[in-house]
Length: 467
Image: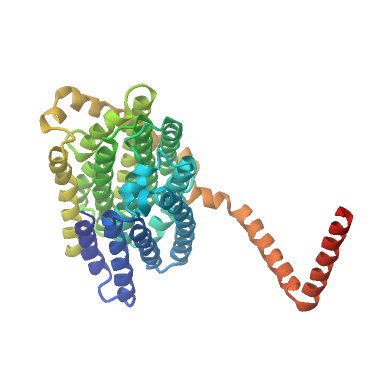
């Protein structure tokens, strides 16, 4: 699935950059990214997995850089820097896994099975979640996502929101031991995920650019997916990997299609905007669980994992918030249409988007029954359809209020956390520069020699007093 979707986005990219000077550089980054995505899904051992994840990070940062602006340069640097930090945490976790894996096996399945009996179980899990959670956009380490999505070209943003982010999320699913209940770790992970789900909605409705609204929607959906993973880990539910993977696969298809729709509708005149907007609306509301869409099936698939009680209530509230955010996205998408009534998007763009549209609508229904998650007859029961409908209706009512009074909301800058922390970072940079100057002075031979003499005298004095 990642390779097929990446090919369609590649057609979109080829149409957009035909004749561009930097087309060759984009092709290299594109192939690196797709190689990393497919490799992370297929790698059986930890060494190959880590190497391909690094290839993915370098390629994705290069894709962001193809935006060709100062913002793209900044976003690419932030993404690559955060990816390196994430991979450092991940490497530490993988090393601890390799130590406790029986017979020195480096296979991922053996490493995951060894986690429950590891003497460093909690530390290993924390390192894995931090490393992969940073790359998946888990709050509060999500800030690279709106920066990168906003600055990257449309096809690059489509790939990053789809396969790139889901590669890290599905990697987390592969490494966690779902056969054993770990409530002390799973429940806090679910709480962090749910906070991210609501945080993404709260910040997303303050954004005006369609790409940024989609970025914060991805923050929200990744938080919800991590909540599903956490609840399954807490209960030791062996069915969690399949349900969470199905949810991730649906989001991969839909979010990629919606990013392509941003480019198509922005170059479509008002005469043709509604034929383009209506299919996008079905996909967008499907993320909130619109009945008869793949999103409704995805919500139904993870419902047994979430269980009843407060988590079920929060999941319903998340669906309402997602509907509100997606309607806000559609409103901003409508505003972004070209003012030229006769203008139409390039054929390559439209064909790529239509392919992703059909895949996002049809593939979830095929996978739902083929994987044994459920049956079509169960998904089409009136009670199930109504349970999926009323959160959409409440979200639509809230959207009316947002369109009426949304101008009173504060405008949060893209990247929110990193922007708020910029004054602190400037202080840190100044301190680092001061330490660098001090180090430069200390490296001089006269100073270094005097320092060594002083240390020798101090050490000798301590030893003398000890005797």
